[in-house]
Structure formats: C-alpha cells, structure tokens
Length: 304
Image 1 (cartoon, rainbow, N blue to C red):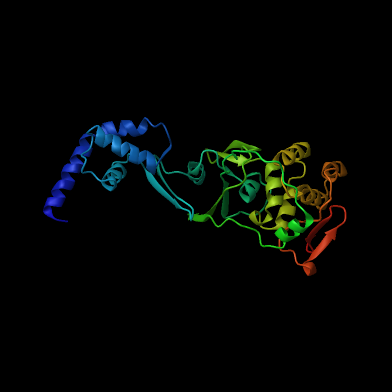
Image 2: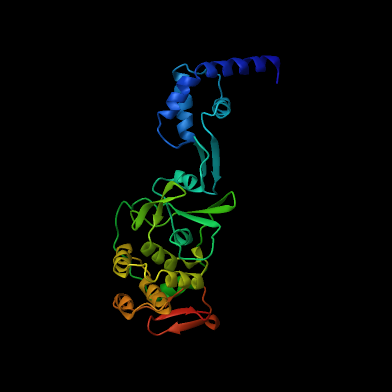
C-alpha cells in the first residue's frame, strides 16, 4: 500500500470514528437482532448521503470499521446453490437465530421437526428448513391423476432438494415446499430463540409424503410409533384434507398407523377416503423388494 493510499485510508477511518455514535444510533434504530447485507448497504448509502462518511469510503472499509468497533459482532454467510445469504448479527447467534434469519416465515420441517418433538432417538445432522413457495395467483382445481401417471411417477427416483450448505457441524437443506399458508406451523422456543416449527400432525404428513427427508420408510414408521398418544388424529385428517394432495397420501398414513398399532378408530377416517388407486409407500420400489397391502391398496418395502 502506497503512502498516499495509507493517508486516504487514515482520513476515511478518522471520519468514521468521529461519526461512530451517529452510525451506531442508525444501526440500533433498526431494532433487529441481525441485519441483512441489503440493510447494511442501505445504511452505508445513507451515511454517505448525510455526510457521516466520505463518498470515497468503500463498502468493505465501512463493513470492516463496523466489525472492528463492535457495531456488529458476527458476519454469517450461508452460501446455498440457489442463493447466498449474508447476515450481520449484533451478538453471536445460535443455530436457530441463523436459520430464522433466512426467512421470518420459514420453519423447521420433516426430520428437524421430528427431532424437535422428540419423536426419534437419532440426532439428525441435516437441518430441514422450509420456505414455502408464494401463493399461486390463480387457484386451479385439483387435477385427477390416473394409475398410469402414478406408476410412472413412483418408478422414478425422488426429486430431492440439493439446495444445501454447511454451518458448523450441520448441513442446512433449504426446502421450497408448496404454498400452505404455513398450515400447522407455530412459533416455538429452542435455546432461548424463537423459531417456527411444524407441529406433530403436519410433520407426520410431511414425512409420509417425503420419507427421504426423514431417513426413509423404516424411520418414518418409528416416528409414527413414537407419536402414539401425542398426535391428534382428527386434526391430522382435517389438515390432510386442506393440503389437498394429488396423490392418495392418506393410504400411506393409514398404513403407517396400522403398522404402528394405532386403534382401529384412528384408521377408519383414512379408509373412508377411498382406495381407488394403487399407491406406493416410497419411490423406486422394485417388484422383488416389495409387498402389497390389500387393506391400503399399497406397495411397501418388504423390510417393513
């Protein structure tokens, strides 16, 4: 670095030091536990426009100055394949603060919700965080599916999300599920941090639909067993009808309930939903590896 460059940098830094109190007041006025990169860029431009810092101050200089003077404590970068999230926290965040900073309506789902509700003995190292797609602009009627279409879909591999990044010892899988207006999602507290979590009923539906986000069918069955006495069947039925899936997911749920020895009365609502189509508990079930349930008109892995 030349002497001239050093001199300019010193002048720039001195100006920021003189304005430190005002800059700090602007940042704190946001009244948040974190700021996004866009928030900080807006503050940076505001400071230039209001002559709190020189126009020659680069954003990198500004950001470094804030960090050095503890105007924020931690910079977190979550680099997903689909999008990079950069967040600036005023104090060292825990995992759940980081997750909720991605999207204030996002929520823990699938195996992460299973773990939250204490329905598994495993400690999943992949965090499933679901940010739902926007509400469709025009609601269409539920499409009827044929047996041929269903067969074709379930002979194919599942379309698993590869939108992952690492954070400490964890891998975060950022899902983009169908719009449900966060049905069955409520605010909970983990390690002192508020975070949205799918409830037990919604979680059982989600893992029945996508067993590969819960360690597979065998683990899904264990979760159903562990949820016995905790799940509200009437609520689950009502929720499933609202979700209005094109596939006969109720046959999978009925099967899991039967295998987990739920009372006959709990199975009845799912039997009453009809079983016109032959369904599959999971995708890519080869003939030599599957059995068939007459009661649920359903193919399932022989190991169950």
